[in-house]
Image 1 (cartoon, one colour):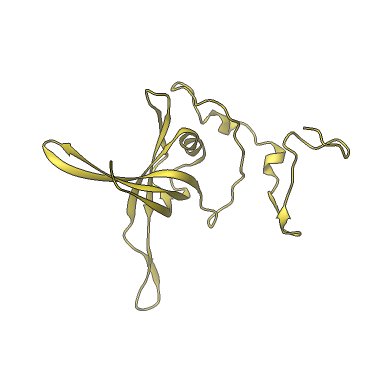
Image 2: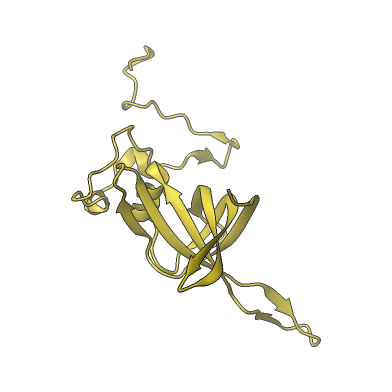
Length: 170
């Protein structure tokens, strides 16, 4: 068993997530995230430092949702565990590291997003295109903001459409 260290990173996707489904039926997404450090020069100007590339693995629903939501160049935040592994290849001992993600999300410092809650559907089979639902229009309820700026409180939307009158209908 390798060493695992809690980690959180913010960077940009280098490529589209690669989704695969293992023999056990568990979805696995591989992501590659570049993290650049901003460095201030002696003259006060800012520039990007050397990028550090991280391999990220996501499993199950997180893998499917990442593959259907994220694209190359998207700014993302990832939290999970840094995992170190050693292996032998061609008679040489090698080491690898990856982040096993607990959460992945868009970095909202650079844009906005509309959150769409997924149903508790079973994991897609290997021949199912998990990105197919992206072409369908988003419902008007999903496009409404989840936060009311005027009252600084959450906007409450009934889960199954607007309630009729004052009665609760679910």
